[in-house]
Length: 565
Image (cartoon, rainbow, N blue to C red; front, side):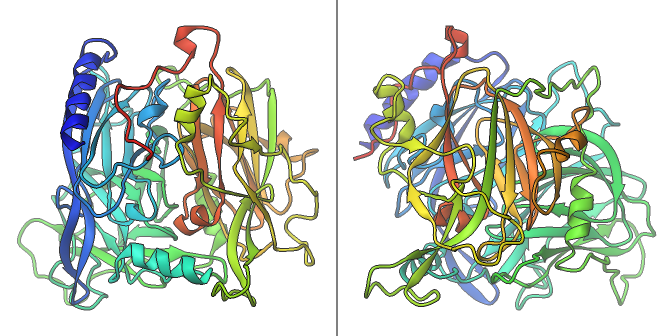
């Protein structure tokens, strides 16, 4: 089967080289396999790509096409997602398991086509099957197209900084244990910066990541948060950062002494080495304003100036907002604004044809007797959108949609446009925590101008929720605390220069409003980027119907897709 799929993948690649690519073409061959790494005084077996943690980078220019052949030499099925890449008309290579494809089986391979269109800056790729993304992930660097340049002075250096979770146990064992009890999964044992925990953890001082800099030089840091279940603060001692991009789009530059970044988000920042030649700590610490379990540890890395100087006996450390400082988190979010200039235009939908009000909640399910569930008696944790906990299908929705003449009525139901029962979302004290479940989806007409208001609730363990939509960037037009007021809050929307992003932090007991135009046909996953919440069902699929022409319709499937049986 591996040989057959490899030949079919080669034929698929060869045909596309001559038919669909407009920019330059890049090809990569990746092998997913288990590799041993020693950290925190213990050797752990983790899933990797090409034996690397974090995984290999993809380098391309805006408008290029990238082909990646993924060979699965690991012990279980795998899929790869290209986070933030819109994949125009080509959902077939988007990657989430059982949404666009079935997993690549052990011994199999699959050639995926990544179509870069308007994206520029930093995105990332990661596994999208179970919790494999804990160690299977890496950066996508998208440089300006030929003949164009950055909207800022060319940096003197360019460095990726990836935040990750580290577990001493196999991450799949952590997931399996949580599913067996219905409770919260065990938290990670460390955070890492470019694969290294840093000197606050056991056996980690000598391997701490170090960034070498030269006095007076400016560096572009491409920061990716691939952590599984925590939003983070990040800062560099004695150095401000100038934020110039987020989620593969440029923003109006602003200076800050800390970053707030959710799982799934990327930030492009400029840092100038303008301090006395010495050593300075870069520090990563969690933000969490909830009573849920979390990894309350801190990772450090080092900025080291070149030259001759005495190594300091005490290395400067940055100051941070408090771990539960939601005000600082939100103040950072609202500073993000699109460039919205002639070279970087935006097009915020203003004639809304589809409005969706979406509650995001952590819930409970009652378990059958003698199943081992341990939460509040014989219950298990769940999560929902509009009181529906998404049930993942056992086959790929996209393939069923295409094979059944663009119809999924035999597999799915409609997710309602608003909660079945309205309530005081952020103050309610007696609302049932139990939720319904089903494979409910959102269906949009091609060309719909869509507004979604995500509303946090007071049900269950309340906290921020990093919501992500595949296949699209969208505009974050507003965010606020308490219940969304449809009478007054829309009047405060930013329709002039809202940030164009793919992942947002819906604030605890608050709301966030997004807008986008449904102009990319296909079946696209929407979910919380806390891995445990996706596992519990805080997700749905968004089906965007074909338009009336070939150019506004999904492309046909490639000659080979990983089999579902």
